[in-house]
Image (cartoon, rainbow, N blue to C red; front, top):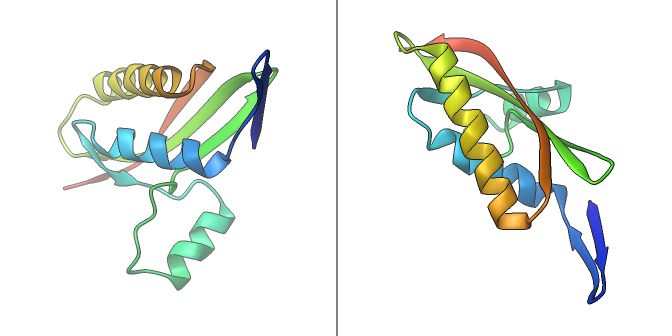
Length: 117
C-alpha cells in the first residue's frame, strides 16, 4: 500500500490497483503474447487456478522513497523486435502510471521470459 500525504489529507493506493493498471497496459501493447509468472506465489496460483487469468501476473511494484520501481515479466510474439517492444512497454507504463496516479516512476524493468507463436 502506498500512502501519500498532502495538505488535503491522506491518500492510500492499494498495490493491487497498480498491478491491475500495469497488467492491462502491458497486455495491450503490440508484440506482447502474454505475461509470465514473476514469483513462486504467482506460479502456485496459476498452477491451482489454471483457467483464470490475472492482470497482476508478471507484475511487481515496489516503492522506494515515494518513487515506484516496476518489474515486468512478459512473453513476446515470435519474430518481433524485442528491444523495440521493451522500449515501447517502458514508455507506455511510465506514462500511464504517472498520469493515473501522479507518482513518479523511477525504473521500469522488462524481462522477456519466453516467446510464443
